[in-house]
Length: 322
Image 1 (cartoon, helix red, strand yellow):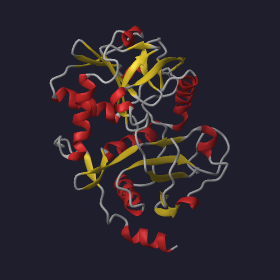
Image 2: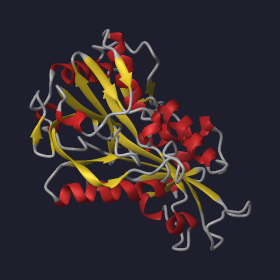
Image 3: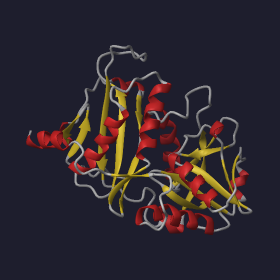
């Protein structure tokens, strides 16, 4: 999806004009993949723009960095306020936020030392349906990739790290070259893991099945949201290892993620899913999910972070003046 540039990016403590938020070509993260990032949706909700589960995303950002021993040089609340600042400064009603922590310029070699700077940036851009507007209703066609997901004793899948996404590049690129909307990766044991950028759910006989954390998946925040909403409706969630053929025998399949939201799967490897698109479970979960933003679903979990329009106002005025 093309980037629609906005006016300001928050970087290392202050807003900068979009075109000035730059890094050196010898930045460590560019060479070694040492970046940790999040994708956060801001919805045009009742009462104004609301970032969905912002605190959970920021917590996971710190967790990802911690796995690699990277210390984020800002307090968590500072980054939450900075997200508000980016939305307000760019006058966004809805957006996709990209907070990123990365090792900067100063050394050559894969091992970061204490002298290597850690930088932080947050960008916000307009963003639509990741897999297409029609996908939410009609579903998408996917394939099982020939590329396997990371083995658990190689690179930790629980970290949302830049280097991990080379796996996603291979899976997604292969799928699109074969004419599919997305690819699904198997784990090191040949069992179902996840999509290139989405968690996976299979509906069978009234239950929802999803691969466990041990299947080299990212602990998806939308995944957790869907599981919570489904349990609220009395649907049993089963986290278990699944063979590839479980995808061919499903009543419904859907994928979840901040970008993908809740996207039904229409077919796998040219085999139609029995629902042939969006089934009743996926439809109900979409309604409950999107209902959080129009008020139809009560936010009992405190998932909606109302953007504070005055956040960082003084710094914003300084940046704009510059």
